[in-house]
Amino acid sequence: MAEQRNMWNWEVSGFQPRTLEAEQPLVRRYSISTTRENSEFSKQALASKVHRLKDKIKLAKEDCLELRQEASDLQEYSNAKLDRVTRYFGALAEKTRKLDQAALETEARISPLINEKKKIVQ
Image (tube, rainbow, N blue to C red; front, top):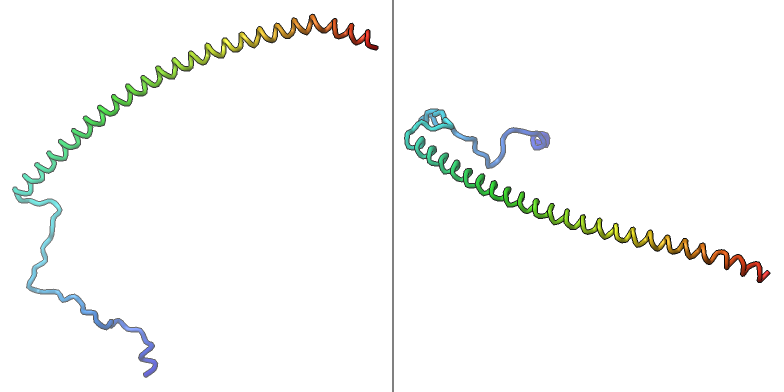
């Protein structure tokens, strides 16, 4: 008895196997309907999809043109800013060059005086 309880079997309590009804003939289902109504409906559905896709393409083209114009405007703005910054850096470089030149000239004038002072102090 104990051995029978631990043995595995195919029968599951509460499970009813599917009964095949001999009355229902097997009918093959086709994915494409052959009826005229379905054909007309599918043509209308296809035409509707094509129309929606054309609208989406039109909107995408408009968006693309808008984005290209915006990119062009941003490029123009960036180029103007870069030109302005380049001119500003040029002006700063010129001022730096002048300051360096003035520092060298001042050092050249003061250096002999400092050397003479050191000689006097010693």
